Length: 152
Image 1 (cartoon, one colour):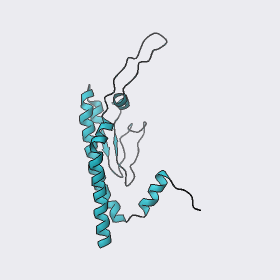
Image 2 (cartoon, helix red, strand yellow; image 1 turned 180 degrees about the vertical axis):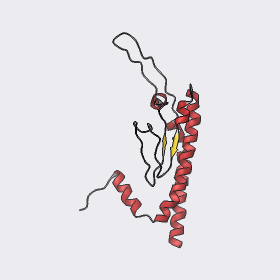
Image 3 (cartoon, one colour; image 1 turned 180 degrees about the horizontal axis):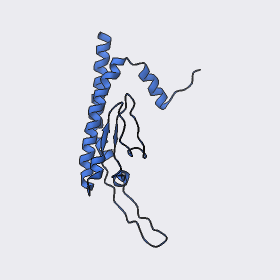
Image 4 (cartoon, helix red, strand yellow; image 1 turned 45 degrees about the vertical axis):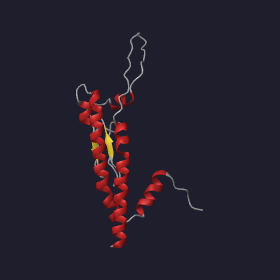
């Protein structure tokens, strides 16, 4: 019996079986979708604006491109041929997670407190606003390319 393949390995094996034409048709759909999500994230993050650094740090990374520095745990990440990312963060804005999820009060030994900050989500709501449209766009691109590949 063969090895059970899950997660990324399963996806990679399925994608390897898809004709190149279908994969190439997918990239523009991913790029358009990731840019729409990033635009909505910027609009939603504007409510938390103090300096504008967070809003300006929100970037869309299309397939094959590399994220800005500090966007992924202090490093850079290159999107695979069928990946796209929306990231928030740069040298001036390393607090996106604090805005997205808020903070709880912490007390220090010296008696001082950090205070609290309510969550002002911007990334997850942007994804939720665009998810259905992005999925439809991606499915249509794959379907159209597959039909074209079979017909051609």
